[in-house]
Amino acid sequence: AHIATLLLLGFTYICIFVGFSGISESGSPYGTADVTLQSVSGLSSDQKQDMDFYLSEYTIQQNCGSTGQICPLNESATIKYKDSACSQEFCDKCASAGDGIITCLVLAFLVGFGGCYFVWKRLTDANSAEGEEPGCSRLRLYASCTLSIMALLLYIGFQIWFNPCQGKIDSYANALKDEWGQNPAVNATVSSGGSVASGFVLTALVVTIVAAGNQCCAVQTTRSAPPRTPGGVPPGGIALAQPVVPPPGGHHPAQAYPAQPSYVGQPYAAQAYAPQGQPVYAAEAVLVNNQMDAKGVDQDKGGDIGTV
Image (cartoon, rainbow, N blue to C red; front, side, top):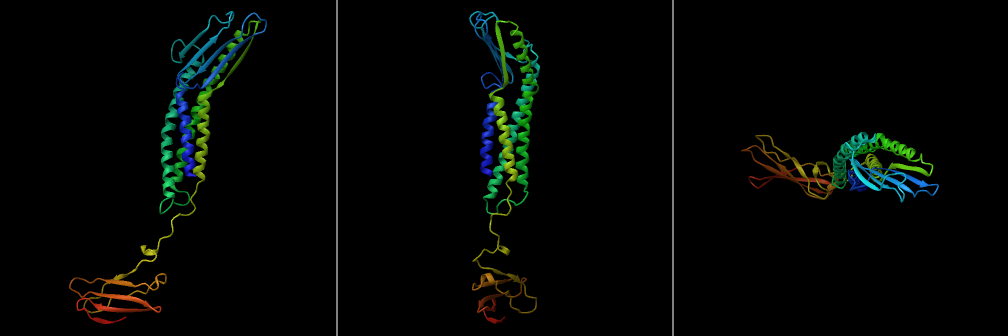
């Protein structure tokens, strides 16, 4: 699930890059508006005006046919929304919309890095010795919330373009169709709507929602690592008895603890510690026929001092 999320985020970034390309005419447009004049009486050729809209400007390409009865000349132009030459109603709306979309794309781009980090951390934790924290872990919460914020930013950017910018563009195209359609010799049609860049932003939004849902549903029920042996003793290893300090003034052997059932047949060494100046004793315990035989040895004299 985590690898699939990272792949989805990689595709999301490709879509965001296409969205960034729609800033100017060198990239993909966010919207289009085409007005076509078709001859109905044979007095003029078909004529068309194509307009492509970007985040900071729009382009006009006019094809007036052979007679030029409707539009004055064949021309193409690129007009910035914030220039004085842009006097249409959509100019101010699309200028502010372009600034807002760029801001949303930049924030989504940065937030996405945080989402990638948390997803990658979940992936590495799941493959680690201890495994990912089961249940509603913090990393699961962080990854889901980060990707949800990224999707929200993309949604805001998408909505900013279509309302009110693209709506004003559609109104302008329809008004132009009505103006040109007053000539009885032609039939005017209009086609307007979103284009390549806005479509990729919408695709990025959908993919990010899927990635966020994938992280939310990816729950680790149990840790993947095997349980540790109590006390930190590995299976098959040698367990050490707890240190015993003999009371001052007496010679007592160190206490030997019974062997654990899971280590039957293995020797266990008991370590003893005494204050400075006191004799130190060690006890060696060996499990023989399920009985504990412990001998105490005076380390100072090297003699056998008894059996436990």
